[in-house]
Length: 254
Ligand code: KIV
Image 1 (tube, rainbow, N blue to C red):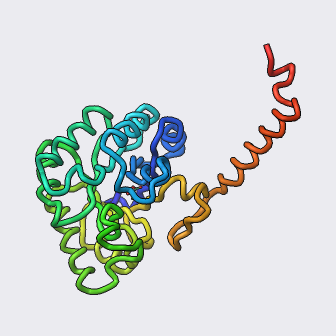
Image 2: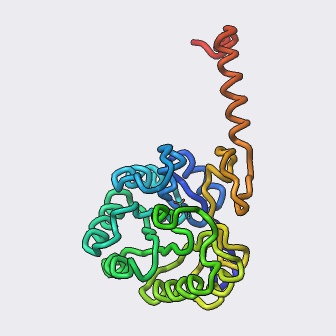
Image 3: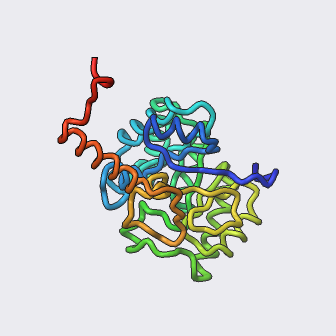
């Protein structure tokens, strides 16, 4: 798709019903993101979600998908520091969920794990720029790689991941000009989130683009629906109908 100049559309999915709708809508890739930690489990960060929880989400997503590529985030603590643990974690994801690939955050610092997982024949997507699993190291969710040193490190990391054999890289919240430079230099696709338009595809967190979290409104987020409003109205309507004995009607009864 990159070679053809065709942009790659990616959104996150965490369950069967959303995966079915997303797949039918023509998404190229569904990412079972560890953002599930925030938007599904209500944690403040992506740090607490476990491997078992990610496998559960991925298994449900796989059941709803006929054609999209399914990539699963390896959660915090399942690949950093030990390539042996990384391999075991990735093998569990692939065997138990039936997904097609895994994603890991970081460049040089996780390269041994990336290589080990790739050596087992498991496709790996990289993730550079803002890497939410390291939030306690960074201290904030601000734009990354605005200084030259960090920008150069990001370019080196991207090349390293490509050389290792990653099939794509997510670039999160970095200046658009830097993302454009990386996209030009690399032959593998770069999927941006808050990285401008000159990359090979875009990803958003589905619940955020549907307007389910009104408090979260970073500059890069375009809301395609106001589901918070739609759902609240439907739920209020239902409560009112039940209280007023308007539901169920005779037609809705046996
Ligand atoms: O977990 C996630 O949803 C992600 C995307 C934001 C890229 O990693």
